[in-house]
Image (cartoon, rainbow, N blue to C red; front, side, top):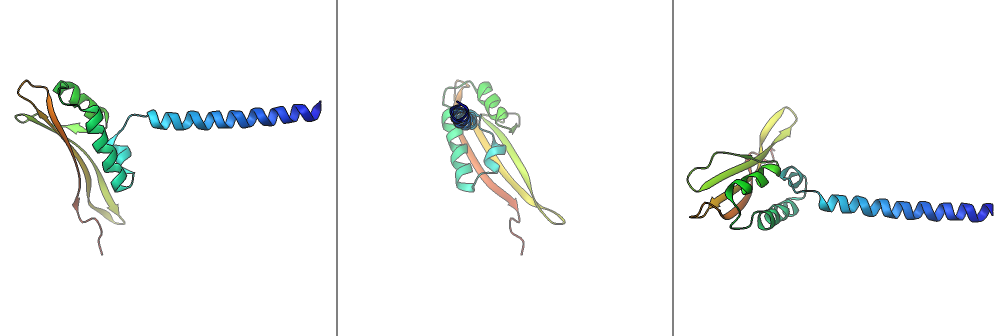
Length: 134
């Protein structure tokens, strides 16, 4: 009976570990997108995730105020609208020993249509400054 009990505990522990790992991966997949997260992905993967965000979370016809809130929840700062365009940005300084050499920037531009709803959204990713000093 002692051997069977130990085997059942081992099976139970294995099932718990599999369940825990599955729950962990489900949590990471359901986590909302942020530009902070995209910053730490590979450049191609980060841009792909940002583009997917604009396609899925910022569909044409969405009220512009809601589009702005969604972009802000993704860790961006939005400037007041200038005409039909609202520009939102996220930036992170690029550091080297002894100082800052530039910034890595993400920008989402929200364009309102004639009715004031979101007509389109565009994401850009670029570097300002010297990315690789020699």
